[in-house]
Amino acid sequence: MKHYVDAAEKAARAAGDLLRKNFHQSKRVNAAEAHDIKLEIDVTAQDLITRSLLKEFPQHALYGEEGIVGDQLSEHQWIVDPLDGTVNYFYGIPHFCVSIAFRFQGEIIAGVIYDPMRDEMWCGQKGEKPRLNGHHFRVSERAELGEAVISIGLSKTGEMIDSNLPLFGEMVHRVRKCRVLGSAALDMAYVACGRFDAYIERGISLWDIAAGWLLIESAGGKVDLRPREDMKDKYSIVASNGVIDLKL
Ligand code: LIP
Image 1 (cartoon, rainbow, N blue to C red):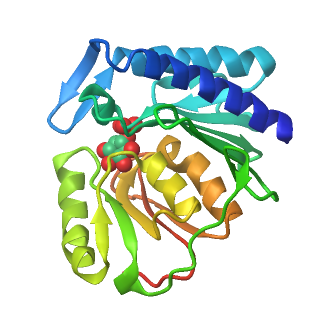
Image 2 (cartoon, rainbow, N blue to C red):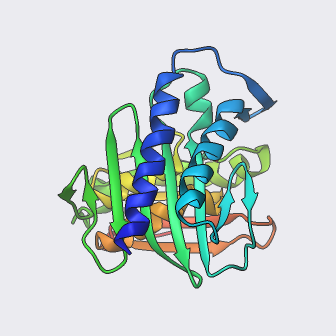
């Protein structure tokens, strides 16, 4: 399994370097909606990751935010978000990352998340303690809701924002602090290493949370992921340190 983590780390670092090098350059917009932006560099970064991974594993499939490659029924599948936090990236807010997970026979067994601006690389594989820049980490032990710092994602359409706002309105009074930072993958990484005690979002895609899911469970936390019946390929997620009762 280590060779999957090594391959993911190499691809994530290459894409992260590309994103960092172009962070202060003007960015080509492929599409802009009320609450979302699609950039050309999202596509360029995914192409770089695809070439890197499929050069080592030509038979594997890839399921990414910017498109799919190969047979998605293959038992070897990479799940990729080349730039999570695209709106932050476009506005020059240095809070975004690359997220790469590997799924074997339907189970996520390896994952990396790379924040190129802070040079933070979270790596994990099933059955092993995960590492941040080489050092093991665990979820927080905070059980008291009133002492918790949590993150809530608002998602990217009016409908999904309406679905998340009431939750924000409730939780902001129950916890110490509620953050909305705009990168689900970094939210997951922050729960995994104990910076956040929980992360909640209704209307997220698999590529946003796949690697973080493996990291949180390997670090002793809990992830509750439910497909949305009303939205294709969208999920509701509650990720936490596994001891806090969010009273949802
Ligand atoms: C983003 C997620 C974030 C969510 C945004 C968007 P993207 O992903 O990380 O949690 O609230 O709407 O989905 O589009 O930057 O990859």
